[in-house]
Amino acid sequence: MGNKDKGSRDRNRYESSGSGKTGGKGKPMGKNAGQSADRSDSKRSDSKPAGSRPAKTNPTRWAKPTGAAPTGAKFAGATGQRKPAASKPWREGVPLRDVPPREPADDICWGRQPVLDLVKTVPGRCMKIVIANNVRPPFLDELTDAARAGKVVYQMAAPEALDGLCPGVRHQGVACRVTEAKLLELEPFLEGLSKDKPALIVVLDHIEDPHNLGAVVRSAEAVGAAAVLYPKRRSALPGGTVMKVSAGAAMRVPMIPVVNIARSVEQLKAAGFWTVGLENEAQSSLWDEADLSARTAFVIGAEGEGLSRLVGEKCDQLLRIPIRGGVGSLNASVAAALGMFEWSRRQS
Image (cartoon, rainbow, N blue to C red; front, top):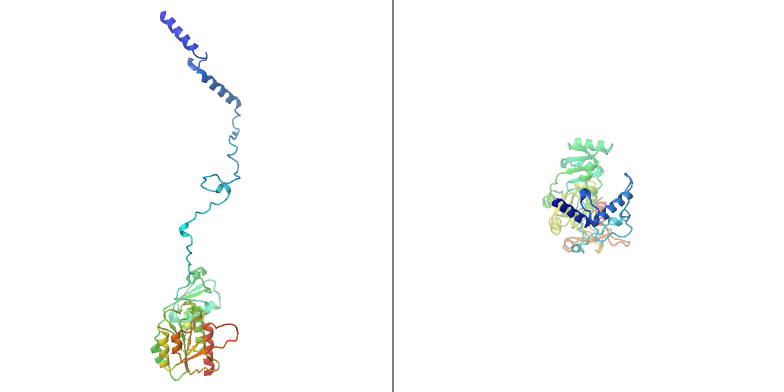
């Protein structure tokens, strides 16, 4: 019994030390336990029925931003403005490279009339003709008939294929790849010319614009010139642009490349040609004081610069074309055409 009374006294002493409340299974809840129970009771009493939408605890969380983006934001999309590009100080003051536009290759001839003249005149130089699908008769029939007669291969293709073959130009739906022309030498050519017939040779002193070269060749073919001389360096070369501008005349007129223009003028003089240089500052006029013989060579200067000093000294005569207006000079191709047709008029 002594042990039983002692256990009862210990239990009473343990309970009297708390607040008189006990938790589950007789465990004491302590001072904070009662407060936790009261809070959980109040939450249960304030809770909404199941299925209802929870209340927004942070009203600014769903609001649309009205001011600037917060500091340190990675993107500026919150303000509807793009983030400014980062500056590159190592690129400041560096000019952008000028990318030249693409041009057709030198072995491509384009345009309806140049290709048609090429097929009819020198079909042996035509490797292949490409014709767009939207090209219609009667030109289509004329071109294909000429190609069959000259045994030239032709192919129908989409217009986009012509755009890729002739970028940046108006090809008119027709293009032709040509073989490289056989280069002529000046001395054998002069030896083969008849000395009993009139002959006109045009010498170009470093004309760099292919459009001017094509225009000169076209006028030379129209007047019946024997050949056109051009320097191998620092000059426009007879490519696709020249064939287009000359309307195919570059294929019919002999084009002779030379190394030195001044030396070539000396060769022409030795072969019996009267060399005439067209110079804007010359004293004699083309209309009144020109001595144009049956064998004449016109020397045409470059655009803007005119004849070089050494070439002008080698010429037998320097002539100018009288100008009444305020224009200081004529285009090289125009001056060449005037000189060539004046020679043709006097020969007739």
